[in-house]
Length: 165
Image 1 (cartoon, helix red, strand yellow):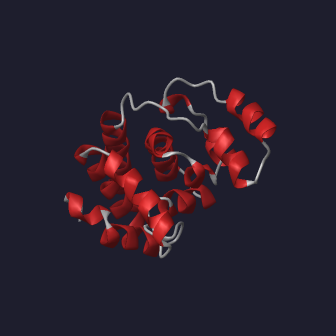
Image 2 (tube, rainbow, N blue to C red):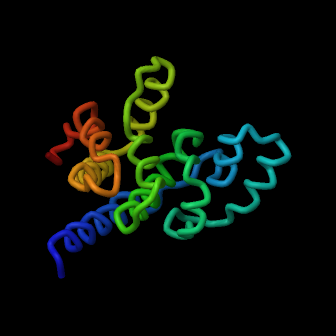
């Protein structure tokens, strides 16, 4: 097994352990994607009915790809629920979903958005935060297929304090 693959496998195992049983919040994945497109209440309700999974592990690869913008529009609890699936997907694939996952972990220059993201960060346990840090350390090395600079910035801003660097 290649060293990089064994690192990925170790991070995926850690994701599964740290995020086991995290419940979903108010906003579902497909609903959040509709919010991103400024959808109507009726469209949100229809999208919400598509999300029948009972755990984040049941979210399909196609749903992750289809809902690439969703992470930014989830309530804090739903973000905690879906984040591990996006990290897992990002470790095993390439594409703009990877960057969207990383960007959801960055702080912003906008004060209101920053506070929203900090609320999300505070919801994670120390173990979950360490896994996010390990994910970002790995991504900060993948300079050819993701925004490695953004991953490094997220580590500097917040996630590096969890003993992952």
